Length: 158
Image 1 (cartoon, rainbow, N blue to C red):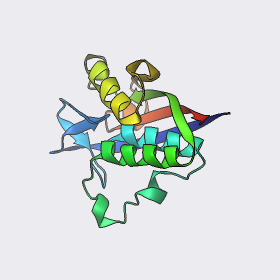
Image 2 (cartoon, rainbow, N blue to C red):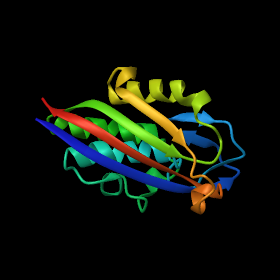
Image 3 (cartoon, one colour):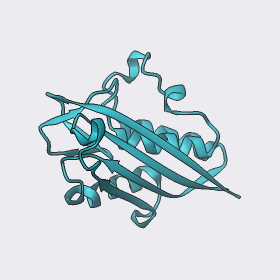
């Protein structure tokens, strides 16, 4: 039996913070605002795998009202979500994500990000897709005020 989950996250860009996507620092003039490290890519993937297993969402397991998650490494939160999914009897087959950002360009960093995510998810690198798209100047993302991410995960019952 297969299960599909969808995840989404977005954060505003702010000065004075590193930009972290998929657990990797991406050189940029601003980073993502968030209670944790603001890694919208990890957050969207976390929601996708939790959703596929019908385990709720990232806010249920790692609420932003809990001080222990202040500035938390989102890659570690994703690893904990992977454990929850496995404990529920599922294996991750693949993950596909689209990062919407006017800048920086994601392509030069995509291979490192995919490798980091694959290691955390416990899958081969070929099972992780991360693509960058612009918003063609439209909306908050198009004005480079923030970054948004859509993710899909496929799980298999073990």
